[in-house]
Image (cartoon, rainbow, N blue to C red):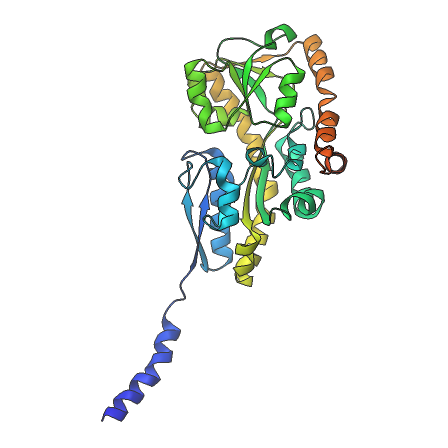
Length: 341
């Protein structure tokens, strides 16, 4: 009797195991964006949903927004150490580790998000940035978007001449943006985006370098009144990466799902960001923010001042033993190739 029961249990066990669904792999994703941020809506969440679908539910994601897992400046370290599986690693917030990526944040380089995004994507996946920046940091880029050209948003001062920008204290992400503001006679104040509201509200800054969509996302539309129009004051890279160690542990089907989802999201997200900016500008106008076209004479002066920023940036990076000039030449070549299509 006991033998029969034992055999019955033994025979039923494989069947039970076969019928039990495999437990999905859960990955932790973290960034510094507030809940409802447009880039989470346009890029991160669609990518996570697409990966889960392509992997037939073999992977799920736990998302931690708003610096819940750590400050924006700490997310490279937290991703490398495994505290976070996939982290929002903005090169500007890790400029000591990723100086070359700022090539996509130089002023007067491109006019749309898609131009900057596709050039950066190619360099960071297969070119100079992949070899000289991502590989040494032992991270793999999963998705990125280069934002539309930044504008100057101010609380009080309308910027419509070289005189009106002189001495303004403006939020910067550092690096290339610092060079841009100094070239125009403004004073860069380096800080992460989540800290900008408090500084503007206290009056310790006069304004910010921001894309239009981030003004609304961080609630700055309640504070700023004026915005420039017609000059590119640089940009910013929003990128999510995974450590090489975490990537190596993933099953092949999950890796394949991520690669396919990444390739699919890149052209779509930049196109969506470009479209969203047009709508956001309209909403900001309705909220009382005026976009003031820079007069042609002033625009020519500003563009002339900004001409040397790219070479100055590259020379500075070269002096640190990094391949700044090579990164700049490749990025400009990729931009030109994209424009010729």
